Length: 113
Length: 114
Image (tube, rainbow over all chains, first blue to last red; front, side, top):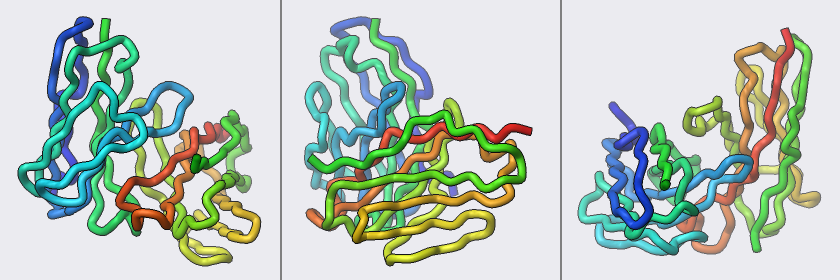
């Protein structure tokens, strides 16, 4: 099993550009999450989903959008990229409500210049 | 606001000694607690989770939970240089059943000195 797969691994965006960070899991997990991690800071929840068609905002949703059309995929959309969105983005999934923790993807390192 | 606090370190421990990592949390309703290891440039990897007061052991790792003191710790016995990493503590709040995400601390940077 591949687990949680994120693409791309690295990306440089110019201010105002848009992009989609892809996340796919093959573990049939209902729960999926997007976190961002800034240097010296903890992981901050951006959006989460409890199943196909259901998404909700986390702690830091501004500037991002998500969709969940299938159980496997949970893409994160950045519209009008800003330097404040320079970060490492992690997608994660869990079988239940995170009762046994999450499985994380390998991350996407995004730089906005 | 729910918070998980950790000493950022670095915590330096000689090889073969016991490394002790500590974490406090603010949400009294938190149900379960997690320790993740994160190597530089890599994603977090789950080491252990604990629900009940007391100790839980898994190989060289022991997690300890004291809900009355809102305190979680991770002990690493016979520390190895490969244990050098950042250790993230996280809790799963009661509200929302955890569906609204784990709350993570900022992590403790552990260095095992050969």
